[in-house]
Length: 230
Image (tube, rainbow, N blue to C red; front, side, top):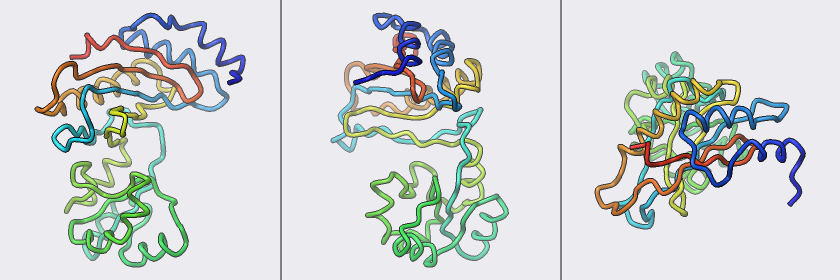
């Protein structure tokens, strides 16, 4: 696979055989983000669990102290006072059956987070097959099914992210933009890693953090020393 000059130059900055402390890794990842756009910095965590077992699932949500650097578009399913509260909190789209129709009939997906009041889950159930595969289905564990939709909108806008295992037992999450610098990225990294470590299932045996790696959108991966992460 062909790699551009910028990527090749970035690779030269990294010792592939080394496990870096998080501070050094975050400083390096900012140096390797050489694209013309503000690259997203992503965290990839491989866990020593088996996601096929319900008692070894790792999933949750956390508000990053410095946000993600991304403008989050929110769609809220609510009626009455809750709908008004969602609008007041800055929700981009608010509705009920009309939004279900828009998604199913127009293939409309101009939103990043879906929030719902509990009484709306019967309405949203029809969207499971289209929202589920995109990771957009509201979920109580992620705080996106809640009576307080206004708070959920505020948190989503402030940089709340959901973390969950994929089928290969890896969590992939953004922790900000290269322009944040190492210090702000470090605060986001510590917050997310703290949440993942705290979410360790009781059924998990052996080493929990198998590997931790960070990378910019176009840059190479940088491995982090897991022994210092709790």
